[in-house]
Amino acid sequence: MNLATAFPPFGLQIEAGPLVLRPITDDVLPDLIELALGGIHDPQMMPFYVPWTDAPADRLPLNFTLYHWGQRSSWTPEHWDLEFAVEYEGRIVGCQSFATHNYAVTRTGETGSWLGRPHHGGGIGTKMRQAICAFCFDHLDADEVTSAAFADNPASNAVSRKVGYQPNGIQRKSRREGEWAGSQQWLLTRDTFNRGPEITVSGVPEFRRFIGLD
Image 1 (cartoon, one colour):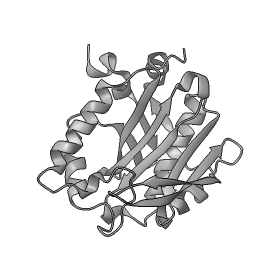
Image 2 (cartoon, one colour):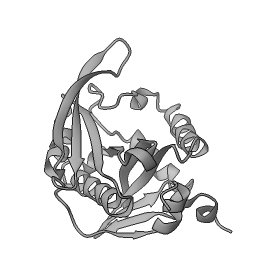
Image 3 (cartoon, helix red, strand yellow):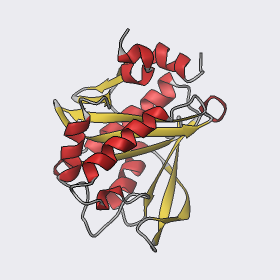
Image 4 (cartoon, one colour):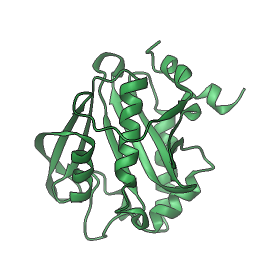
């Protein structure tokens, strides 16, 4: 018996050259917390619907840990959020997720991600998005993948365009208290997907059974 047997998301790993998407087990949390404390975005801006990076430095580690523990404890086949730590050339650089509701029926979900500021601008954001989308299409039988970013987040929107997402409307979303902003919605299909390097994945059969696909 090991943790991956008890909780199959811990057995997933996606590799694409120097990029590895690995499960966020407790031994990875400290590296991600240090990365987040070092800064993810310009403090004057807020790219997230939930402004979690506004938390004081003495509170953020606990908030971050409780969030990830909560994601695991609330997992059901009908409602799940698959979170990976992003490792690039042996260093933890950020997070990549895929969240969905009733996936066995809808075959769609939304990608989300962040990178530590020292790792912005080097193409890692595009590679990790291509890797998670390839995993969803090739190994989870996805029909489409969505994403979203505030209109004042040009970097994230640029990644969506590079990967092949198509504009899918704008929604008003709240972020900081009393503030709303336009959120660009994006839609990716197999036909529009601009693939990156070939991926190698482990732990797929166990995960598919876990979410009710097999």
